[in-house]
Length: 271
Image (cartoon, rainbow, N blue to C red; front, side):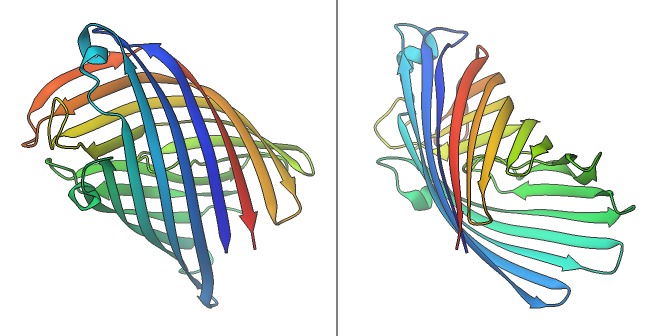
């Protein structure tokens, strides 16, 4: 069983059509997996998180103050099947509830699947295609490609498929260097997307809020045996975009924001 918890802060940045935005994120995840056969491993995970937005300004998107605190719950399973000496299949079905405080979490429910097939080229390289497929709030099904890769460039340096923080969707890659026995240094980038139901009191009552960005980050992880690890990450979000839709999915406003620095601290406990 594993418990992961963390907090992130993105500093205030200017919105293109007016105002500023700042965000804090909290997240917790509990996961368990078990080998049910020599070639098959199954898992189950549950998580909770919150995004706290602060909009400011007298014009544009900042003046709208379209949403504030957004809550999310998630439940996912995992399947890891070693087909033979070369092929490995992975699948993770997921249900998420993502909604602003004051809105019913059930109104922000989406479901999806992340799956990939990996081929072991040699002892140092495994790679293959994958995809993410998710339902959308007031929209069409959303999908994105994934490159499943685990490439040991040297004995201490590896390139891997990267995961995100909290409930965001999107593919990523991370370069992992282990210069010392208990230390890892990370350099990564990914595409992130968060889409959530709004309450019935704002400028888009019962509508949908959306944020997308491309974070590029550097981090350090300290391992304390097998049971505990602490990670500190710093980076910048590029290509940030905010989108506001009404309850029928019609666009009300859309704008970008300037590159924004962020920091993350996470703690992982294995027990």
